[in-house]
Image 1: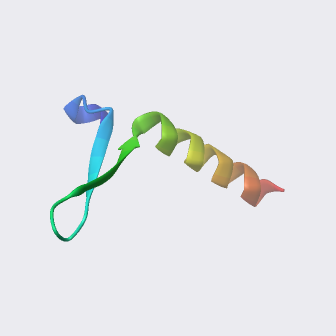
Image 2 (image 1 turned 90 degrees about the vertical axis):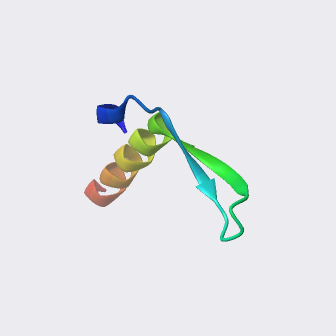
Image 3 (image 1 turned 120 degrees about the vertical axis):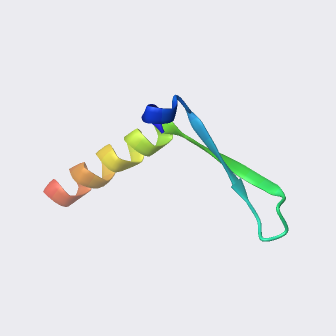
Length: 40
């Protein structure tokens, strides 16, 4: 994402309809939370 200077990625259905967006900050937070959960 960062190498292409994109901060969000569209999520589309099989019918090519927008169903959501994934943001870089959300991915970072989710990965951080996942790593913390594995340490506990």
